[in-house]
Image 1 (cartoon, protein in one colour):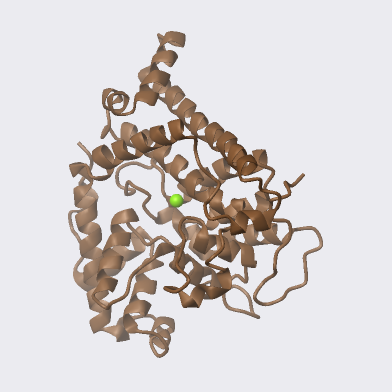
Image 2 (cartoon, rainbow, N blue to C red):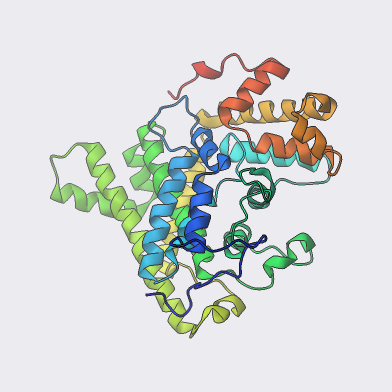
Amino acid sequence: MLAEYAVRNSRGRRYPEPSHSYRSDFQRDRDRIIHSRAFRRLEAKTQVFTRRYSDHFRNRLTHTIEVAQIARTIATQLNLNVDLVEALALVHDVGHPPFGHAGEQALDRAMRDYSSAFDHNLHALRIVEDFELRYPSFRGLNLTFETREGIIKHSRDYKAEDYPQLSEYCLDLRPPLEAQLIDLADEIAYNTADLDDGYEAHLLSLEQIADGIPVFADFYRAVEETYPAAPEKLKFNEALRNLLDRFVTDFIANTQHEILEAQIAGLEDVRTLANRLTTLSPAVEQERDSVKQFLHKNLYFSETLDPDKTDAERVIGELFKFWMEHPESLPQGYQAKAADEPLSRVVCDYIAGMTDNYIQQQHSKHCGGIKTYALRAPS
Ligand code: MG
């Protein structure tokens, strides 16, 4: 039972294809994403912690699966198109370069020297439109309009005048709720997961988290009353899952409330509204912000992670420079692309597609590598 404001049918694919006998268009999009190389590479890309810390921490693939779980739960409760939501959740991070946020910044900085920029949403669109080669009759995955639109528009608005190449995606209109909800589902997933991994890595203590995040402290206190003898780790888990549930439950209830308030009667109402509808209530929004601020202050910018960032900048910066000076060392397909596009864009695309492992191999091969890489661990 889809809500009247849900996406029902697709506007179609760039290259028309006969419909499948039992899978819907959005189910096929989801399946094409799962079978893509870019999706498999997520497994070897950093989310926050590089692989050397522990095999238990999230990588970009497990993060993506967590986002898909949360997004499906929300979409089901709002009677949205769950197949489209799942496709969008699974594809939402395929445009990320190696080494997490540090890698993204390093790549963007390298591109700024050529008066350009790196944007992971735009890169994700290039992957599904061009880089994935799986079908004899077209380049890319030939995804539906709605999935491609969601890749671009789920997390931010791109101004039509600045991005004429994206005009087909109706930049003046909001995306459907199926795309809107991905952004907050993503943030709920990584906020709670990063607390978990930070605690597990001994970079965040229980006291520190409880001091910095009052709503977590409340949950932990309640858990302690119910399970006084339980090990700290299990009490921590219990409090954290209560926090995750609080965000998701409030997200669903508040979005339902916003939909009613705005008198949304169909998809066109969602699209033409000035603002997005998928939000938390003011009180829980404040709690979300407290988690975000806490993680920025205590985890993302903690000194322990500094060597990772320095390595990421060095590896990406040096390799970028190397290929700009030695384009003949790029793989044939990328050399051919340089005939039609600036070399800096070609080098950027090549680097952005790499896993953490592969870029380290390339750095060893062309720039001498970083010898100490495997030796460091959090104190
Ligand atoms: Mg994400």
